Every structure is written in C-alpha cells, then in structure tokens.
Length: 253
Image (cartoon, rainbow, N blue to C red):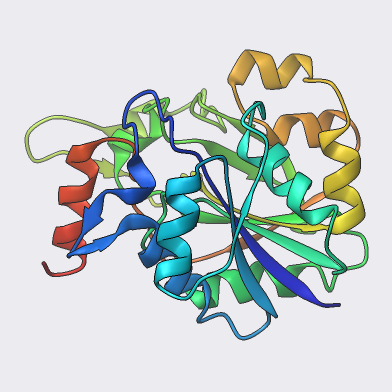
C-alpha cells in the first residue's frame, strides 16, 4: 500500500511558542524533521500539516510541501486526519514535528509493521536502560502480548514487579535495572491505515485517554489493534529550549 508521512506542526506550543521555527544547527527544527522523514524508502511523499502561514512559508522555502489546516484541532492526530481526507493513500505515518532525531529506518519499520493484516496501526518501543525513566511520568511505558500487539500504555511503571521492585536501584553508583526486569518506553511515531485514522479521529475522547493523557488509549479502548516493533534508536523530543541544546549535543554540535 502507498504510504505518506504527515508532520503536524502547530505554532502555538504552550511551553515553546514558535517551536517548529526554532533554529537547530542553523536550520529550523521543522526542516530537520522533514528532511529526515524524506530519507524513508517506503513513503511516496512528506507533507507538513500546520495552522501557521509562517510555518508553511518556511517549509516551502526549503523545498518542502505544506498544507494549512484548521487552528481548532485538539491534537496532532486530528490535524493529520484533516490532510489525509484529501489524499489517496493506504498508510499514513504521523511523525511529530518536534522529533528531529527520527530516522528513515524508523518510518520504514512502522510501515512494514502494517504488513500484518491484523494490525490497524503501528508504533515503536525501546527497552528502558535508565532506571530514572521507569518512574518518570513524561516517559510513556508500554506492555505488549506475545504476538507483538500493545496491551496498554501508561505514564506509570508497567509492568509492576510486586515481588522485587528492589531490582531497580537508585543512588550513588547504583543506577541499574535488574536484567530479569523488562520495561519498554514508547517512541511517538505511528502508522495508520488511512481508514482507521479517519474512524479513530471521529470517536470521542475515551475514559482511559482522559486519565493518562494518551491518545493511543482511545484506539485500544475502541478495539483497534496496535502492532508494536522494537527499535534500538533513541530520540529526543523538543518540548523546551533546553531540549534543543540536548539535541545539538546528540548531533555533535
């Protein structure tokens, strides 16, 4: 099936207004994301979905494609769905506009996961190595079944090892996770079958989604099956100006 990448890019971030236009190594953040997405081999095109004419002009200036969307969307998923309605494609990949370390290989991986006909959508997980992330509510954890489908996503530490939480040690010289304990964090890139994306965004916010503040729980509560794949790639999402510095360091800047 044909696949497209749609990058939602909102100007009015509460913590970092104008974030997509912030400079990273001399280029706008959105340009880094766009160009990296363009390295994927299994997508036909990359489009930015934005509520900002300024962002659209910048994308066009570096040779990219951009579409103006409504400013009333409650989420990036709703924003990409507006664009997807006007496209003919089989798969839509949602790459967040604040993920400048995303790779073409990651995008190709979530596209390939939808070769499983039982999957409605797909995403990536990475095994947690830093024990601080286990209890960090900003790091979303996930558990999955033996067939590779997500069971649940949470900001809480899941699974809960009730017999031996001492296996996670903190303190000077003791930042380790016991090898027997497996925690996986969610990497926020999704692929959807186009019809699933349109159906999903037409559904009301679910109870678990409200409780955890996680959109993917709407999909699980409504019976959609999310195929997960494991990646060794770790990304850094840009939520604050300080995160830009971390990405600069990761890029060797």
